[in-house]
Length: 107
Image 1 (tube, rainbow, N blue to C red):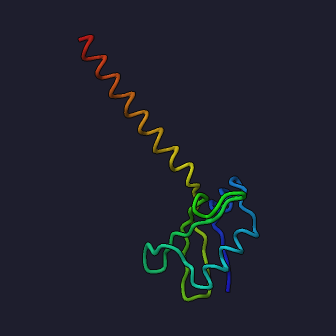
Image 2 (spheres, rainbow, N blue to C red):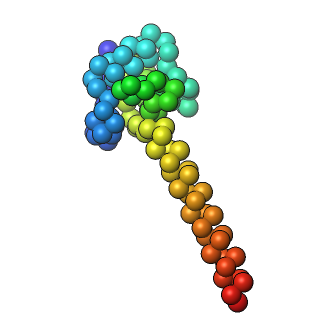
Image 3 (tube, one colour):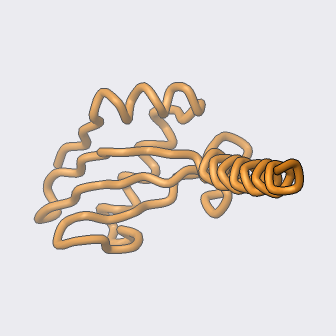
């Protein structure tokens, strides 16, 4: 039974303040059968609690879990950063539309 982190995952978890204790707690849940949403044959999306934040509002991770022996934490992102990216994209789209409306009025 092994738990492995990719270098990118490890870097992001440190940035978000996710401790080894939180990773171990998540790994125990996966090994006990709470794997998360299945994305592929051995690929799952698993929620991870951030410090002082619940699993529901915390981070999301992509994990590979095969045969009950090895768990690979592959990718990690904060749910809040995903929402910020969507808001920013929406704001940029509205700014672009406003620009074209003003440009049409000028021309």
